[in-house]
Length: 322
Ligand SMILES: NC(=O)c1ccc[n+]([C@@H]2O[C@H](COP(=O)([O-])OP(=O)(O)OC[C@H]3O[C@@H](n4cnc5c(N)ncnc54)[C@H](O)[C@@H]3O)[C@@H](O)[C@H]2O)c1
Image 1: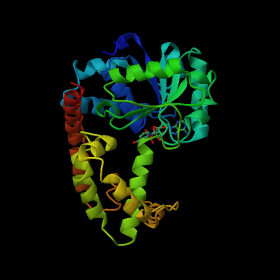
Image 2: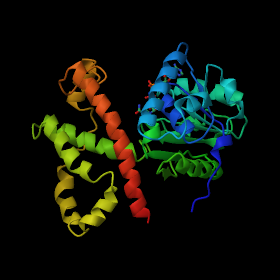
Image 3: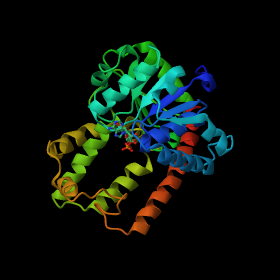
Image 4: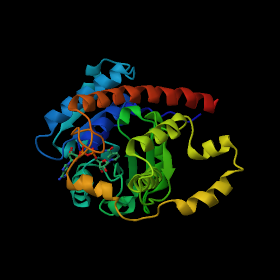
């Protein structure tokens, strides 16, 4: 049994109150931490408050809350002043993917906290070892990579930079279990971490097949959804190979690997999407054609799905751990 940490006295901070920052603030609060949430840019607080309230309602409707929503709202203190972090043991940076902006934020966090406050980034792609150099006492810096919605996903990657000290990484790894995560731990900050490397290999291949006219976007999505989607929440890729029997894989690797795309260019179709400035479901314009109502219905049903998959993963995790 993993020893339990009493998180109710461990103050945590979040900087950056966009999509991920608000979601992470909600996740930490539901897990039991008092949370200080700082908006690094002006005029963000009101939207952040609404976004946090909306996400708490979602969590409540999904059965994740043990107390009324107001209890959690009162434990998340929103501010524009970094000095609310003064008693935080952990501060999570969730600002735009821009090194200079992150550096400015780290300076302000460091000025407001003690030298053993753990500072982390939710970066998806910037090397943790680079970000670490922007922080005084870099041994306390690491990557904590969340998935959205942060309060209802099991995924988390905890990544050490070259100079991260084990004692901080081990503490965060232990805490993450209390946040309801099944964290993966990376000793080294390989580019794209694990999850992005896996997914980008799939993105490259699928754009390649669509560009060659071998399949359509809709059929590629169907194949992915009904094949990988039928087992992924239950097991990982190695577990899947194990379950299928390992004997045939070697022969298939030999046949298929040489056929896979290994281009390093941005796929043409994605270049066109960027040129025409379409962003997908947020704008109801993208790789698919749909109305605004259909886009809204899609977002709503995905929120519902998140809840069910979160519960399903939990149910089967218990069976596998028994
Ligand atoms: N969106 C995702 O699914 C996802 C998943 C994992 C990791 N991430 C990472 O999390 C971080 C935040 O992503 P997001 O999706 O929440 O972005 P977002 O655009 O929703 O929010 C970014 C926030 O950054 C802050 N910000 C904006 N301009 C700034 C500036 N000039 N200086 C300082 N702060 C500024 C603001 O608080 C803003 O709300 C990024 O590093 C991103 O790569 C995102």
